[in-house]
Length: 361
Image 1: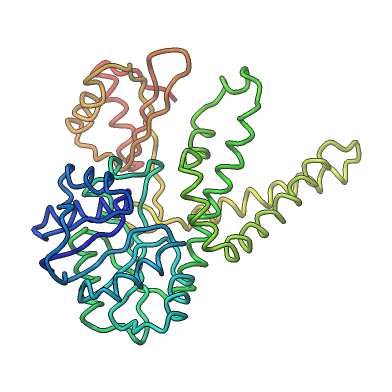
Image 2: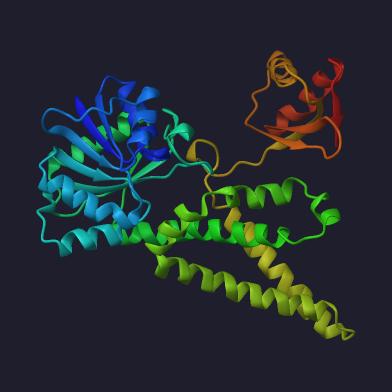
């Protein structure tokens, strides 16, 4: 691939353009808002000047509701050898394109499984897709050359290609992406009118659950509008669990011992199933989830402290498998949770104490 045209310079389109441009591809940028294209160009994602002739690949990075029409316009204009979209749903754009009686041999659907709570070109980074799954949804009509261009795009963005059927993809993202967004927003919505004293008690748990609720509502409305059926199916299952959990909690309030036991069994069931489901989420490098020991270290909020604790961990000969920071409320400090192999936890704890760190159990 020598040339590409990215239509839509939001987070995903600009990030892909940055990755391509950084690896020697001549990238042209287009957006319905020319200022966004100019911003992306100023970031080094390419040029907002139109290409002089057909490019190797057109990347359509517009909302799902506009994907099919934008693709059709690009194909009618003969802008490229191959056409690819990065919409977060795949079935609807494909069916809309089929309804336009286009030759779809030059088209392949795709969806990079990566993003941020922030949107727009200023949120873009060239490494957004590194190590992340990038779904490709070819059909029997997809030309081999176009599939190869798509695979090259994924490789240049340093993502991991995953080939799926379009409708199977939409059912999968309804479970692992779209429903979590809605549930996160629903929980966060309860904070909107909550008493200030309750909000001040917010800890890492509520921050984890509501992190993605900071996403752009308009963007998510467009995504959910393109995949309503599969999302509704997953939410129906969640709603059934919610109904059972509410009944179980009410039973725990009963003065009847049998009802209380029944309520406790119901709560235990949903918690146990949740634990079992969470254990299926892939761990580090896509491997089976590993069990790590947590070494929690009190750290002050000032420059250089993280670098110092990482350096001291390195001196102890211990690899940090994962790390989290839990910020303290009301003081300039927090807990750094270092996840390490169980066999290394005791030695790391002793080594960090020797270097003056305060370890918390």
